[in-house]
Amino acid sequence: MESQVTNKIKIMKQQHIILLIMLLAFCTVSGQYSNEVSGLIGYSNNGYSAAGNFHYYPDKNIGRYFEIGGYAGFLEEKQTGYDIPIEVYTLNVGYFTNIPLISNYSKSFLFSVGVGGVIGNESIDFSEIQLQEREFITTKGGAIYGGYGAAEADVKITNHLSAIARYTHFYHPESEIGKNKFMIGLGLAFKF
Image 1 (cartoon, rainbow, N blue to C red):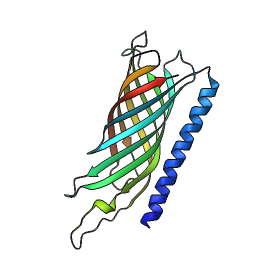
Image 2 (cartoon, rainbow, N blue to C red; image 1 turned 180 degrees about the vertical axis):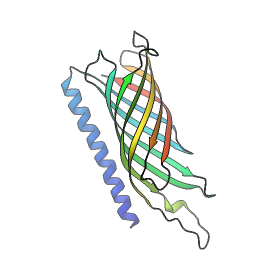
Image 3 (cartoon, rainbow, N blue to C red; image 1 turned 45 degrees about the vertical axis):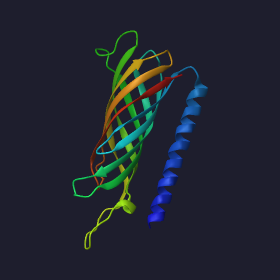
Image 4 (cartoon, one colour; image 1 turned 30 degrees about the vertical axis):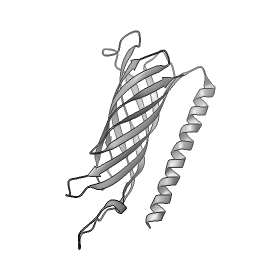
């Protein structure tokens, strides 16, 4: 049973990577639009996390964009008295808009907010859990879905490179492990 879950996770990771590569290839060929690829690392619910995102700007003069990205969280559940390792992998699709009152006109600093949907998988790493006699864990994790909201600050370093800071809050109504998760991260963005 555990090997089936591991195989499903591997397949899901491969599908996310293939989807991201296809989107990057499609949007790079279209050339007339402005695009962005970003990577972040950060803190997330008693653990660490990483995220990679692709932003598609239908019109580079308007501060709105679509986002598709992946999130990987390596967390620990500590409320039970045990450190239970949890892995979360999600695919995120959302819509963002710049806030003109906080962003400046020259686009050297941009502040954006957005919302979107989430689908993915969460799992417990049972190999690292040592339970006493007559103790057991009733959940095994599984597929999750839900939504997210995010706020992102973008500081221009060069014409193509920016430093970014981001807060993302995830809500997974079907999660047996934790319905609310967050990520606070720092990273770099490359615009092309």
